Image (cartoon, rainbow, N blue to C red; front, side, top):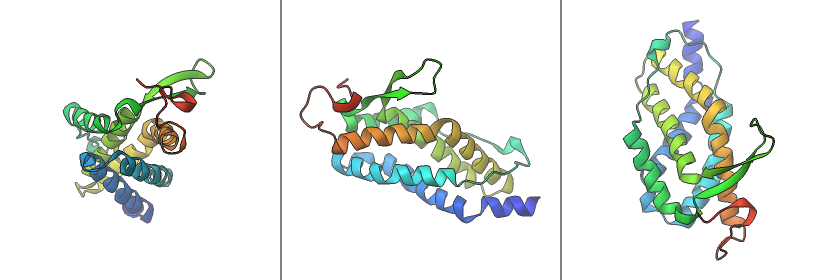
Length: 185
């Protein structure tokens, strides 16, 4: 089993995920360098790619679950969140319909900054754990990222991408009430 596991954690799909996750993390860490238009067009392209690469992470059995760790602190998460919020400003909040909640078609409020900070945290934790360069750490990194994709950041990427699409292509520029469910607050 170890050889098969080693092949999975070093597979092409994992290495491609590492590349996209790393680019996304670097971009968010340096977000203050970019104007709003570049920010939105970059995210418009990278979020679907990140989602695609998340779907391609392999299923694997972790040999030692004690090798799983989280690294991004609440303070680091908040720093990234505030950097993004500083850029998105009043266009940060959006509404979406959660068809899978207990209440049918429940309208929920989302935040581009919060979603991206959550995605960042999961990706950065993955990258830092994977870099430990032990089989156990890499197994846990891939396994954890796959589970978090399914339960957390995959949907956040979809909702955020939809919000960004409307910011780029909706008639939002000078309107007080944002089109298609956005709110100014």
